[in-house]
Amino acid sequence: MILYIVGFTRAGKSTMARSLAKSWDIGFLDTDDMVEELTAKSIQDRVQDEGWEAFRTHETNALYMTREHDFASGFSLSKKGQALKRPQGIKGVVACGGGIVEKEENRLFLKEMPLLWLNPGWEVLLRRIKEKPSLITANLSEDELYALYQKRMKLYQSLLK
Image (tube, rainbow, N blue to C red):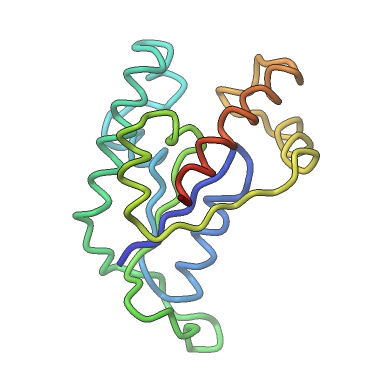
C-alpha cells in the first residue's frame, strides 16, 4: 500500500512525506521531482516550453508510475539505530504536486488510494507562499491566489467522498 499526500501549494507535502518515509524506513517519491527527472527539465522550463496542460499530462504519467514503484530502497535507520514502526502494509509515501487535483483522471486515481490531506489555514499558506513563491504562485495577486485556493479546496474535498 502507498500513502499519497495532497494539499495546496506550500502545505508541507514533500516535507511530511520525507519525514514519514524516514521515520518508517520506507521509500518516498515526489511527483514534481519525478516529472523533472522523467522529462530532464525543470518544471519552470517544461511549463514555459509546453504550457501547463502538457505539464499536467507529465504529472499524470508520474502519478500512475508511483503504483509500479517498488519502494524497496527506504531510508537508512535513524541515529538511534531504529526506525519507528511503520503502519502495517505501507511500503511508500508519495508527495503529490499541489495542482494534481486539477485533472479529473488524477482525482479518480487518488480517490482509490490511502490519502493524507495536509490542509493548513489560508493565513499559514499565504505566509509560506510569500516567503517562497512557487512557479504557479509567483505572479498571482493575493486575490488570485485565494481564488485558486478556494477552487482547489473543493477538489481536495471531493477526494474524501
